[in-house]
Amino acid sequence: MERILIIGGGFAGLNLAKRLDKTKYKVMVLDRHNFHCFPPLFYQVASSGLNVSDISFPFRREFKRMKNVHYHMGHVKEIDVERMTVRTSYETISYDRLVIAAGTTNNFFGMPEMEKKVYCMKTVGEASHTRDEILDRLERAAICKDPVRRRELLTFLVVGGGPSGVEIAGAIGEMKKYVLPREYPELDPDEMNITLVEGSPRILGAMKQECSEKAEKYLKSLMVNVRVNTMLKSYDEKIVTFADGTREYWETVIWNAGVKGEPMPGLPPQLASRGGRIPVDRFNRVIGLEDSVMALGDIALMTTDKYPYGHPQVAQPAIQQARNLAKNLNKGKWEKEFEYKDKGSMATVGKNRAVVDLGNTSFGGWPAWMVWMAIHLVSILGMRNRINVLLNWIWNYMTYSTSLRLLLRPARFPERKHWSD
Image (cartoon, rainbow, N blue to C red; front, top):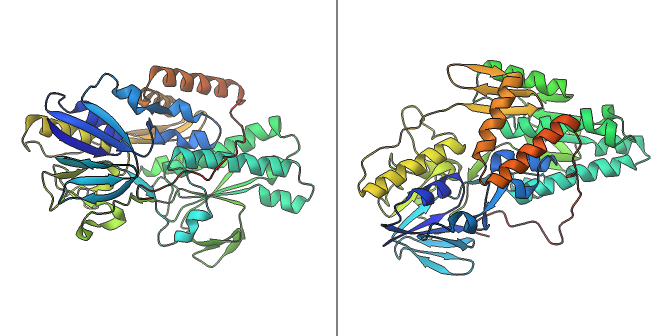
């Protein structure tokens, strides 16, 4: 059987592994975690709305009935395309075909020092760490006697006005409006400052203008300030310097400003492309390494007339590319080129507040919120996880009270962020 090694068990890697012909291929899935997770709901982990276990599912449980699929844990140390091997933290794996579906990591746009100063939500570890820091600020402010310092502790700056930035800003806004009066009587909600900044002229720039306007309206109803055409230049000693030279104090900065492809050590230098993405053809074959190495999802850069800068780095292109590649591999010939079918996009700002853009139509409010919940609920792996998420959502909807606001300090340093670490 031909050996296919898939680096990454996200949307692309998992869908490919499950659809490859079990009579033709021995499939190996390499991932630094032993579970698949659901990144669109990381912001709910960061805002104490869901448990990490509710949006995570063990690979071995998913593969237990798939005798041709095997999970390998490890970080990628080196890819040797000539010897057709991948060296990891623990072993060297040989392959006949390699599929890179490692996804993305945070992009700090030439400011690497930001990595140690801001809080992110690209992994479950980062989302959990961000949750701890948010709760830490609330608890410290609740016992702070100095009014100036208390206001400083309650400053939250969200950088990036895409769906993730809008969603975490809205979630913190809900805490300010509904949770503080009930659970933090020592704090005045007016002392809490939540601001979302976006470098472009509007938030949710990939969606229709009316969706952006509705989302901004929803954020303001949750007492979240929105600033557009505002770019962050540096962040040092809790002082943010913006591109226009303005300097302001911000205790907690949550970064959602952009992503880049995960570093893949060992690939030929000519494959380094804009944003760390790997150039591929319409069959997802890596340019110059056709048939032996392929790339899927966020890390793949496939340029077309409609998408000259590559497809959106969201779940649907990754899933559709994986399914198309599986069909070609199962047939044993490169027959069907990839064509992305845009099913629309959506973002939620809070309870009864969401926007949905379906191309020909768009809408917001409670109907959009129900659509958002339904789509995300059916996309989560495992019936138990879906039930837990649904119960949490129902309980939070009715009470705004959750037992998940637990400040859990890690015993050791947070997880490594890159495949090459």
